[in-house]
Length: 301
Ligand code: CP
Ligand code: NVA
Image (cartoon, rainbow, N blue to C red):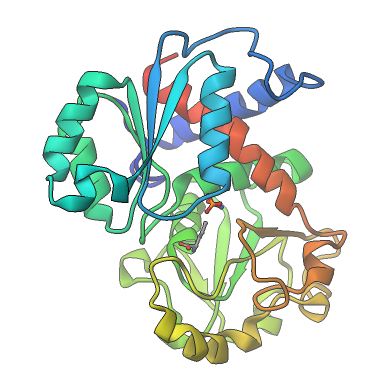
């Protein structure tokens, strides 16, 4: 069984293959309307369950469109509407769903839910974000960087802001794709200790971004963070906003990424998001292509 649970638990050679395949899948569709089928139909006769215990625009739509382009069918399920949200165990849910569908993508809160789903499912399980990681996003981000700038190996990536789940997958990717990762953010919002050794910390954002090939940020309040922490987080993170002055200190050809959804003029200014360094909508598009490669990998197709 080939699941796609995280970047650090997927062999590096397979990750590189997925990126290469994502690009080929994208190239093969140039000029086709979004609803047109791919030339090959690797998911013909396949049913895929997309489970969401948190909101989503990109993950939901990109997986749904991707499955359909590959000839498969989807069902989008909200955790709350399932018995899963009303006390049925994850193990039982996994075993039942495996009798109906050929693959499961789940976005959930606790990582343990994902891991239990994978343990008990008899079909591949894909991580569509947990409180701890967001591997599909970072596969799209690597694909996007390489599309614009060539191999990410040896490049300097600077994360400015909250040491959150998206950062964690960047940290896993830094090892697997062999790039330098610098975290700049306030100490209380440091990445979790398990990630130590995968990145270095530079507290001053102006120092951190020097020589950066890529500057990345994300929302200051994630879906799993309590709303009561909003004001405190904003106060802690204000100095780490990605604005024109900060981008000017990175390399001239530095790219800017944000997984979206963004809170414009909080973590990044609109001038950066819509400016010449920004590739945010390429990242969003590449979710589709990279995840199609992930799904093919999981199904061995
Ligand atoms: N970036 C991302 O995963 O977006 P959604 O929350 O809209 O899926
Ligand atoms: N860190 C954000 C990412 C959203 C795609 C969150 O978990 O809410």
